[in-house]
Picture 1 (cartoon, rainbow, N blue to C red):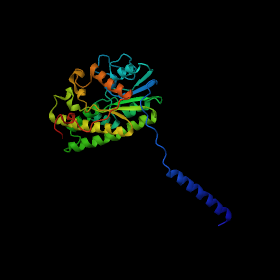
Picture 2: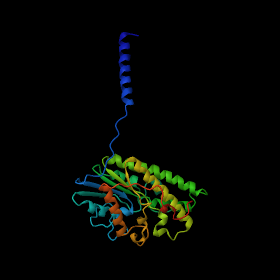
Picture 3: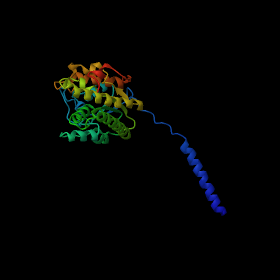
Picture 4: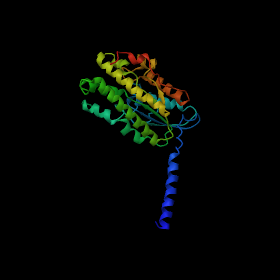
Length: 293
């Protein structure tokens, strides 16, 4: 081999070794954003369904409006945070929305008209300057998947079908959080898990088999939301919060909170923004309001 070729190969070998050593060194993990400082301005983005719009309250909000005088948890939280600091709100709540396109399609297959989903209709509109995000969903998903199972979507293996939907919900939740972080990398994220929908007032007149399916999905969906706590996200545990089932905190439809229910949720969120800790329970009596599947 000519001398010039040997020199070239030697140079390439040195470069390759250097690159290999660099690749072996793990990069420092990005710090997980914490709550906004007490004196800092807050850019609050809310992702949710009709609850984010305050449906069921005395002053509901039209989608994608700030609705300063609303009685839903989003405007109530914003007003409470404005004591001593500036707060800007982007409410991406969309009544009837699901977590992902997959459950939205399940609802369509049952003959329903849908409005969208969090991943496609909310995440792309999260502003980069967002410093606080709340995510609350899953109730519409429970209803849609339970209805599909009742109509034979899972064949004879209903539990297997519901478990598959829980796994898909978890994967989609991961996508949702990743999308939020890609849009607003410095945002502090609070996830609100789904309560046991079988225990809410609207479901108490349903047949037990339907409620058992709702409970199974609620627990599974809440578990997937709870899992996000391992990613530096704070989880508000409605599933195991006895006060979240107080019938006095629900509107006449038995599904949406009323003003008292929204105020309670806003208080829990405000405490976390102000530094309170929150962690979901591993088990509770609210998980077994009906016999498990």
